[in-house]
Every structure is written in structure tokens, then in C-alpha cells.
Length: 463
Image (cartoon, rainbow, N blue to C red; front, side, top):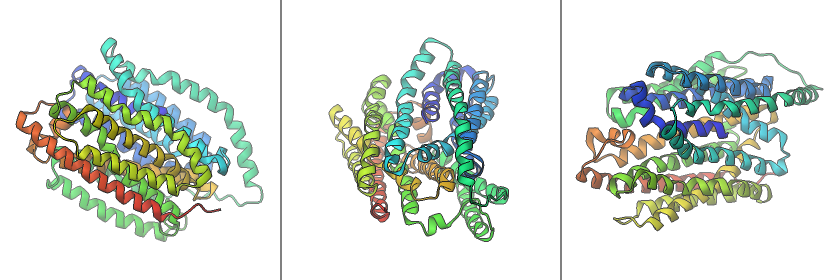
């Protein structure tokens, strides 16, 4: 979990150095990040399905190995297109890891301690978010950018060495679980897999690119229209096959699972863009130096790291409904505070708002994940983990596209370049972005309130 989030943030902060070194074009710089996220999202559900059938630890270690090999390949990149291709393959390894990591934790902790285990799992992911920017800044300031990828390799080696020792334990557990059961050898639903991949590509590519293409461009509208058609085809096909890639009863008939995954979508749609757009707001509208803005933005992940295990343990005692719903309401309160900032914005108010968002995220994430993972059979743990990860990724895309479009609405065709490439903004553009940012944060607060209402639908803890 640490590696998956760390590599995203460390690359993001290193792009201004990496880009000129490899002579990346504008679009190549965008896809160095987008390729990783897109490939990971495509692999989550199919890998989850296979891992449930053939062994969580086996697929987890395969993913770690792929991630490590292509981390080295990224470090050896000699051009933009090569880096994008190997980032895709690195994202595939991350997909294996993300689909199986929460499933492994769920499998080895008893139900009475599941929230605690997933809280530690979430803490590791948030620690990666915190560590990426300062470590990436140190690396590119004092040595070659290639070390931002090489630094993953020792961690990969430690994980593989320890994970290999556990393979025998997993084989024994699986053999015990098979006694008295019929094991089917049905192959993966390849048609459903292809349809799902097409659905995710046609959704995420325009959401990732809309700050540059615009909402009304033929490419954006065409891909989003294709997404709706392909989604309908995927649902229709999955209802007809005997062993579908995704059991739609989980979404239609399992209230806890459906509410938890939809709440995760709304949570990430509300929260994911906050760091990016607040960083831009502090720099171009409030005049903060990049280093000072970065330090302020550590407030949110600090509370997420510190409190995630605590709220995970709390959910073991009181269930997930109360902390997850309260967490979403805290996220709404924090983003509303950002939306109501005066001009100039006092530093203490920014810190308080980000702290409230961080506490809300900690209160929501682990209990919600515990609720979703506890709502499925043991044989569907990786599938549930993959589906939850897919909803998070979709939420991230929605957040960047929707909140970014609102924040940059007054900047015209240069909006995307100001937001994501760090181009300078005029005084009038800075004032316009300041107004757009506040509106975007209020919209994010509305999404979080909607997530709180969805979270309530899951009902109290089931015995």
C-alpha cells in the first residue's frame, strides 16, 4: 500500500525535473502519470477474480515482482514514449497489489479485528502520500531523477523475501478450505474483461484529459458517449453468463457492499482534487512559495496517517456506519471551510480546514473498507477489493475533471496548463481562479454530504 501511493506522489513532484531531462512534450508529461493510474484500474477486477480462485499471496507477489521490474525499467527510460509504456506495465503490477492487499489483510484478521488491520493498511497508503513529495524533492534536488524509481527496489526485495515465506501457509489454508467443497476450474470471463477494460478506458481517459480537451470537445463527448454504451453492454453480458467477471448481485442485492462502494466513489470525488487545487490556490492566488504550500498540505495526510488505525479499531467495536458517515460529514465541513475562505486567506484557517478533512478521511476510509470487505464471502475478497479500488479510481478521475473544470472555468483555454503544468497566471487570472476554487470546494462539500447519506443506507452492523 505504501509503494502504490508513494510512487504516484514522488513522480508528480519530480515531473518538472524529469520532463526537461527526457524532453517530454506537454501530452507526454500528462500521460506519464495517467498511464499508471489507467492501467492499474483496468487490472483491478480481473486480477481480483483470478486471485480469489488461485491464491491471494501468489498474485500479490506476482504484482510486487512486476512493479519492481518495471520500476527499474522506468529508471532506465531514455524517452517519453518508452517511459509511458513502462509506466503502464508498472501500473499493471500496482493493480495486482491493490486488488490483493486489502483482501490479504481481511483474510488473516478475525472479523472482530478486521477494522484494525485495514486501518494499518490504510495508514501505510497515506504514509506513502506524505512521504512522496519531500523524498521526491530531495532526490531531484541532490541526485538524478532516476533514483525516484530505484528507491522502490529495496522495498520490493523485502516484500518478496517475506512474502515467499508465507506461500506455504497460504497453500495449507487453501487446501483446508477446499475440503468438502467442489472446486471449479472455469476460465476467466474474457469477454466481460475486455468490455470492462473498454468501459474504464472510455470513462477515465476523457476525465483525465478534460482539463486540456474541454468538456464540449468532440473527443470528450464521443468517449463519454461510448462509455455509456459499453457500460450497458457490459451489464447485459454479465447478466447472461454463468460465471461472470463481476457478480452484479453484489451491487444490486448486497446493500452493505453497494452503499460502501458508492460512498467510496463520492468520497474520492470530493477529496482527491483538494491537494492539487489547494496547492495552486495557495501559490497563484495567495502568493505562497511552493515549499510553504507543500508543507501546509501535509496537514491533511498527517491526520489520515495518525488516526486511520484508531478509527479502524473503533469500527470493530461500533460497526462502520457511524464512523464512516461522521467521517464524510467532517470532509464536507472541511471542504466547506476551504470554499468560504476570505481573501487573503489566513494560514490558520487553511490548516484547520485541511485538518478537518484529514480527520474525516481517517474516520471514513478504514471503517468503510472493513464494511465492504466484510459484506462478501471469503472466496470474493479480492474481487471486492478490486471493485472498491475501481470505484476509488473513478472517483479520482471525476474529482480532477469536475473540480478542475469549475476551478479553472474563468481561465479559458489556458486553464489546464495553469493547473497542471505550473504556467504563470496573470493577476486577473489569479483572481478568477480564486473564485473558481472556492466554488469547486463548495461542490466538493456537496459531494461529501451525498456520500454521508449513501453511507447511512448501509444500515447498522450485521451480526
